[in-house]
Image (cartoon, rainbow, N blue to C red):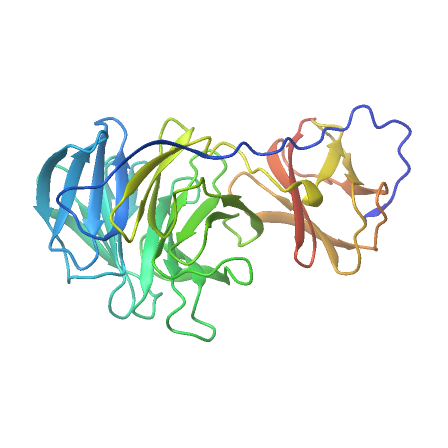
Amino acid sequence: MITRYALLSLTVLIRFAAPAQMTILSQFNPSNTGGTCGIAYNAPAGELMVIGCNASTIDRYAVDGTFLSSATMVGEAANDVDVDMSPSDLVMNGTFVAQGQLLLVNGETGAADIYAIDEVTNAVIDTLVAGFGSSHVVGGSYHPQRGTFFLVQDNVPGGFVENRVAEVDATTGDTLLSFSVQPYFDVNYGDLDISPVSGHLFIVSSDDDGIAEFTPDGVFVTEHALPSGVSDLSGIALDNDLQGAWVCNVSGEVFNLGNFPVGSAELRADRVISIAPNPASDQVTLLCHRSLGRNISVRLMDALGRTVLQQAAEPQQAGSALVLELGTLSNGPYSVVLTDGASLAMERLIIER
């Protein structure tokens, strides 16, 4: 049960630091590719794979923008399309796919098709037909912690289907869960990539001037502002050095962004809570830094993004606190998420007994 709790000392409580502003480290206009719809980053090779909208090829560039080679596009020509690199070994449709192979999401017609492609020979390794999509799946990526694919649908279909993200079983293609990115974000041309550290989803759109961050279960974390001069994004590929990202836009420009929040979720100052102790064993105290009204919910999520504990709470005043009982949860890292409707705060927690 969550109850009000009077703190004797606030000195051990930790506040969130403001996120650093993203910066442009470099940029180029890919010479062999028109308006870009998708981008992938091959960190070991220091190369980028870029696919143009309705293009017949997938083009390879060095990170300085030098054109290297082209490979034939797989599947139908599409402007609802994305490329990615497999971040780990995986099994797709029952077939082993090694880390570093090319993944292509074609969402142009009907449900999305996911192709695993040999990065050297361009031969199709296998194809997964997803049970998600209404002819407008614009991006997707494999989630190494959960062993599933995440796909993002744009705003064209309207109604319930528009602006949705789905988690897809890598073997069957079945939809395991889905959630809307509205009212926080609106996807036209766009893409999705996944942090290998936090497991969070980062979504871009040509209709929005930021990058939206969500947990895999659909909890909105924040929107990260783009640096001046970067807009109309259609693709995103997180950098394996965990400090940056490559993005592309519908005008055919490619940017390398620094200070990208890949390693941990950064939250806005007016959404802050603090927790103590950390590590914790039996219970943890949450201090609210702003007043919270009705419909307060506290969730505890494990390292795979699964909700393992969820409870409602009474309205809170700024400076008040809540106690969350941890029960018999296993040792390890967790995320504490506090919401009151549109508001949200998050803090990392280690359970250690």
